[in-house]
Image (cartoon, rainbow over all chains, first blue to last red; front, side, top):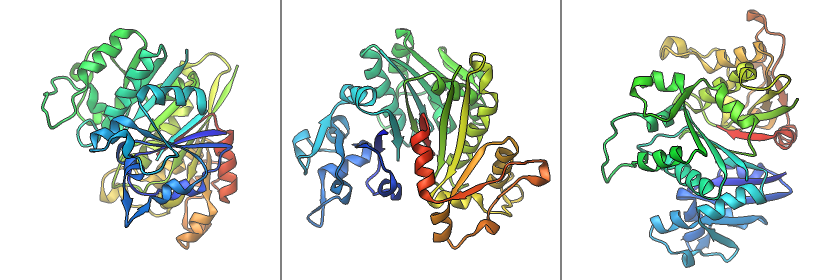
Length: 98
Length: 120
Length: 137
């Protein structure tokens, strides 16, 4: 399956480790964008350590005092709501909000 | 064009998930998609008449009305969840549907994508 | 004529929030969804408890006495009575030192014939893959 997992909080949900998919995308929204925008003790969030696609919602980054270029890891693509709609319809079949 | 069903179970005040659901709906409708939005649990607060517009609280009714007027957006409150919160038909904004939980499942049956945003 | 499978996945604890209760009530609502659909169409629900969500399945819940609300235990029994498929993650039960004896496995006393299935996570993953839509509560 092609699965998009929405992370809305700044913690690593246990379920994230277990989910398997042919194509897995992690979409960082709301407080989930902190995974993409800050380092803790100088380290990038462990959420970003997987071999999957990453996206962060620009509007939620900006709301929290970050710009799109503040993303700490180049593998995170910054998208807006329109891009998110395209992801949902074109790139993934199923979604999960954690 | 496709159809997106969103379920949102989070509160209008105290959570930004409804804000997310409405902005996503707006973007989807602008792209020509249809959207069904199911409000359950504390999410039913979104349909309550007479909401005050304060800078410290989410106010989404203006956008919701525009979405309803687009003809591509259906918004429906869970009847039992709303009633449990004292929100009956007479307390609900025009354009909002009121239905039992099977409405959400029927929408999920006939849609292309489901985004279920659970409660907090 | 089509059947769409929807997985209702419960991974939150009961009572402090309404979330797991709404998973149960929405899953049970699949019993009446046909009224909205064309003849022959239907929704096939599967109710899945994982992570801390397995604690919703404990027996002897006294929520009706303490809070005046239907217990999650009773909702699970109702789901079994209505022949819903109920899966509980074996590894997560083990994590909490629980066994089949600790959780709701049947609804025999109210006439239910279907039983809870305690399954390894791999089986749950298969159900997530075969579902048309996923609803995480």
